[in-house]
Amino acid sequence: MTDLGHFILETSYLFLLKKYKIVKSKKLIFKLKIMKKLTLLVFVLLLCCFSPKSFGQITEFPYEQGFEDPVFTEGDSIYFIPNWFGNYVDNYRIFQDNTTFRDGGKSLGLWPVAAEGEEEEEVEVFVQVNLNLTGLENVVADFWASTIATGDQKHLKLYLKVSTDGGETFGPKILMGGGELGFSNEDTPFQKYTYALHSDAFDEPNVVLHFLAKSGAKKGVPPKVLIDDITIFAADEDIYPPLVLDPSVISTTEIEVQFSEAVSTTANLFSADNYTFLEGAFDMPIVSNVTLKASDIITLTLDPGISIGKYYELEIANIEDLAGNVMETSIAELIHNPLAEGLVITEIMYDEPPAEQEDKLEFIELFNITETPIELGGLRIKGGIASGKLPEYTLEPGAYWVTAKDAAAFSAFFGVPAFEWKGANLSNDEAELLYIENTQHHSGIVIDSLTYNIGGEWPQGAIGLGYSMELIDPLSDNSDPANWRDATDFVGIYEGVNIYASPGSAGTGILKVAEESLEKGIAMYPNPVHNVLYINSKSPLTKVEIYSLLGNKIKEVRTNLNSIETKYLSQGVYIVKVYSENGSKTMKIVKN
Image (cartoon, rainbow, N blue to C red):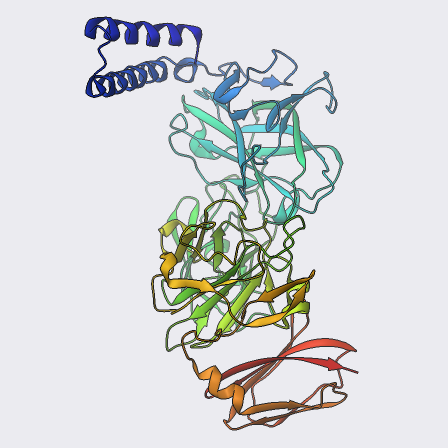
């Protein structure tokens, strides 16, 4: 807050104290605190009404900014130089860099990392500039960008987007450079990028151009991105072709595609031949109809449609903007999974010993409580971790699925396949939120969620003593610590400590499932195996899956035969999961 702000606030507060003669009544002191807060609120509102954002705009073009002068003003949600606003200007996440620049001696640095003590998975930092584009058409922003590596694999995405109402709402964001994953974590020289503002911003008096840096979902620390020599100008003519933004799957038979600008309603726009699903998909959807929803949005009708939980690639080509510029061929990934219920988080290991080492055995287990298969593809586990989109996988009724911090270490120890999540470790010292969302993540639908705590009413053995914690009954409320317990199944010794857990199956004493009867009636031999693995089962088999220790599916056979060829496998250790009409069983095998 400014010195003037403090003066006004404290003066108002002292007046209230003087009026009430500083009596010791708790009730009165409470009232005074409320009055102080109200005074602060009124002051903030006044600041908003007369802030630089209300009148600080760029009005002369072409406009150039190299970030040499003045020195950045630091603070959260602040104008750090005239007309430029940032959310975390702290000489750390948003900073003025004087070591790497294109020319002039300085550049703008953006580094989407969590502040000290925070454990956010996908941090965002942004800067934005206010523009008055009255009388201007074909407005373009050129800028130069460079990255500085941090030694990790985590990438960085830089988006640009524009608002025409002073920043209240923004149009779609466009990824700049680096491909679909953004900038890789490496040192790169300055390169020039061009962002053509959406035509909705032309001749508008209250435009905001927004630069958003976001960390990727992989492990580690993202690179820094440096921006220099921004030029905003009105081009003589529109020479920039339209871009395809991320398509939105409305349903299995309807896809909405938005472009970066208005598109021409020529025959190419409505030709189904320009919208093709690439080979390799689970099945082959076909675009049967194209309709124009808005000047920059089309709707594709599919017949046949896409399947839930399966990944597809849609190729779009030959679309023109109003100036006749033809887009480059674009390929977008699509997946649709509207699951709303049926998955439950049933087991968590967040802190295996020893405490001073990185937790390599951390895992989260999901369970299908329904009587129908559930497709996992496209779902996300978020909160304490950022799993990324889950892979294609059909989770049978009453079956378990596991994701792990370190899939190789996890599978080597537990003998269970796991999908490796991309984010940081689960919290070992404070409450942690976990939730599952579907592909319509803006809908607010949460499939399952819980916040576990460290100690208290939650299982004590899970606090670095070698135990996972298990949900006693998958149909119970998993947000209630009374419904959890320390695992009782001994697995082995890790780093000198006994480990108790049951990932991928029901623990002893947990809800009885069909798997128990299958465990007693199935055998796989020989082990080690050479050319053929034989399977004896009291129940007819429906499917056999073979995984690597990294959790990658090597082979899937849908059969009721009692043997499966293994001669094609390289020497090593594999995980075999057998499904029957009564449940499933997982076993580790060695291939000679």
